[in-house]
Image (cartoon, rainbow, N blue to C red; front, side, top):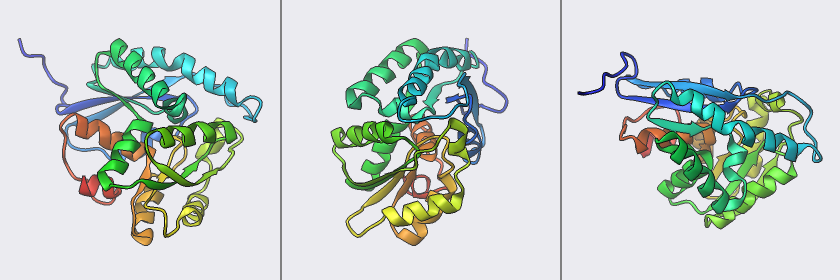
Length: 249
């Protein structure tokens, strides 16, 4: 007997796991909606608190501890792919750490799991870019994990700027003008592509805009994760105005 499909999500249902404080992944992903594709969000309980160099590891541990439960909850919607919208955990521990996380979650969920780190790697490879500049909202320890992951993946991190946002919700409060200015400052003749990580940093629209005046790819982690989920499920529709990754690949 053929299983019935959802009336709205008749092509694909995608689950997304985010920290409870995250207010950016959902609207940025909704902006990429296609006919017959729906997105469904599960949340990891996170406390809004000041993040310092000393408390950063505790904050990261709290997010890791809640990933499986939030994934289990969103899987009850019958989703066919699962995006982990918790960017730092997807970079933690280098390539081995992200591979272990994805395998553990895929074994548990029984569907493809998309990590932002691996999605961005695929996007950069699609453009043939190796020398990159990276913008993060993180504290120095988080930046170290991001830099290590990209280096292990074969990329040359020419420049990296961490915004040292003081709390989880403060990340979503960084104005677009600041993101725009930081991307301009990161660019250079030796940079082949720019990358914005931090899923609560509202860089999707800014990165798509920046590609026009920088003349090179600028990959936002939320946009690129959605691209990887759709392409991995065989949804090949192009979306105009949301960045070159959706327009060209």
